[in-house]
Length: 352
Ligand SMILES: Nc1ncnc2c1ncn2[C@@H]1O[C@H](COP(=O)(O)OP(=O)(O)OP(=O)(O)O)[C@@H](O)[C@H]1O
Image (tube, rainbow, N blue to C red; front, side, top):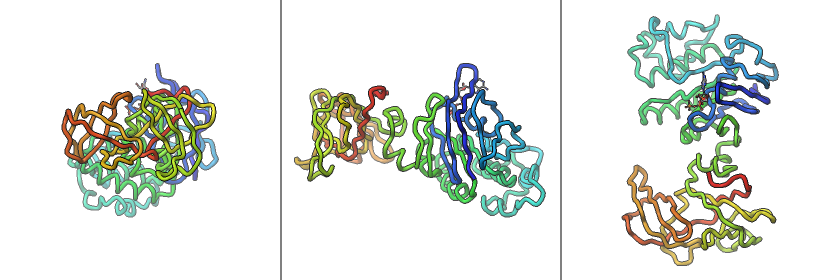
């Protein structure tokens, strides 16, 4: 089964979604984007609650965009996981389930057997999400869309449930569109990701590809590539891009040069170089590449080490993450692995 959107354009007062095309195969595709990007609007176009001005929505090759929501067989799980308060959990599951629905199997899959006699108002947030998902799954949908299904849950429950969701959703054999603004959640639950900004898809592909190789500085910044620096190409070198054989590109940024293992086409001079805070190492070895002297401006302790703001001559401020003992005012030497640097060649892709 595949779900395909082609040339979708929808307007909501001041907001325009699209033009947008997206193909979703069986398995989980996360739609990831900041608040107001149009993620919910996109789901509503798929489920039939929003009518686009142009474009088509097809399921298994058949157009469904002319059908009302109840005839599309697209299951939708809403953000607030609303259940019928006057029915028990079992009553909620039976309500709307088609003749012969395998409620028993869904109950087992979601591990909610103990909850069947409960009044929905007595459920915890996590339990309510499971029941809301179960209620949608018993309708045996041909496609499933979920709008931030784990929002407003406590972090530990969220972490546990997203692992469960991964197993449950990927076992369904239908296309699943999973909306979230949380990149970690997307990486755990989904196998593909589409990044939505200002109503358009900026990049779509396997989770690993999009996270490792963001297409533009805007996508990169959203995915945690916090250091983005504008520079000029000084040298292009062939050869294996390894530490032993210095291939790649040399970029000058404010009088400092950085070697990037990526290549840049001839003719492109102005680039943006990006790297994650974790790409910065506090160097001990003198022969590490891309070594810079920095001053520690700020240290913010965190769960996985500290986030550190560094002032680097010529480069401005950099953000690093480290478990090392470090204090404001320290002068340190850092090294940035050339293979951890991204290079964005296009002129319109300036630092966001
Ligand atoms: N019913 C509506 N009427 C008018 N404008 C709307 C309506 N629903 C959403 N919008 C606007 O459309 C834009 C996109 O909203 P949407 O809810 O799709 O974004 P989102 O990416 O899901 O955001 P969030 O992560 O905050 O839920 C926003 O600017 C919002 O204010």
